[in-house]
Figure 1 (cartoon, rainbow, N blue to C red):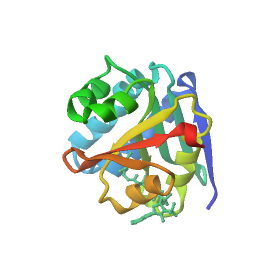
Figure 2: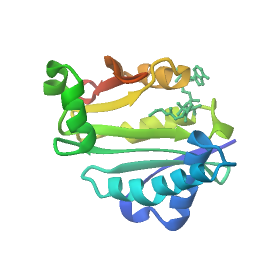
Figure 3: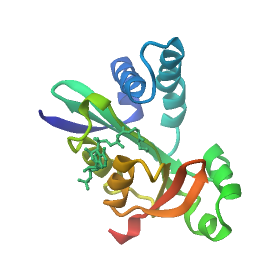
Length: 179
Ligand SMILES: CC(C)(COP(=O)(O)OP(=O)(O)OC[C@H]1O[C@@H](n2cnc3c(N)ncnc32)[C@H](O)[C@@H]1OP(=O)(O)O)[C@@H](O)C(=O)NCCC(=O)NCCS
């Protein structure tokens, strides 16, 4: 199997790309037999992604494996006045907030279709997503007890800043100046 990763600008998110990302979202987070999962995936592809793509510093990477979209990852510049940054400001210890929150790269999601997992695709997506980022720090939240996600990020320099920030999720940070 051959996988290539492309970085797309907001204007390159065609209807075809949008539909393909919705399919990956559905396969990863939903149940294709449930109408609500389809609605959720459509909402992601048409509403959430469109809103996020307008943000400063937006970066989207998409992997294609043997001509099929197999995964994606994206983020943007996070800052005060945005939902997650403002929520973090109240949920994380103040020293973490002062050092890490604001003008960070917010890694919103990185997803690989279950049919293509375990082949190093997430690693490729990650490396394309963070290469040469202009920000000094990057933040994300994920469950540290999810073997693949924890290994993916911890093996690439991310550290746990707050172990339980949002239910089972931990807040991870990556110092982009250290590279
Ligand atoms: C997390 C996720 C993106 C990993 O995708 P993937 O393409 O299977 O991951 P990779 O094959 O690139 O493997 C990444 C690392 O995890 C390890 N890994 C893969 N599957 C694993 C598993 N089931 N258990 C433990 N480690 C695993 C790999 O060995 C690799 O480690 P390495 O870089 O040290 O070699 C995928 O499981 C997914 O889409 N999960 C749902 C969405 C999610 O939770 N995303 C993260 C939140 S932002």
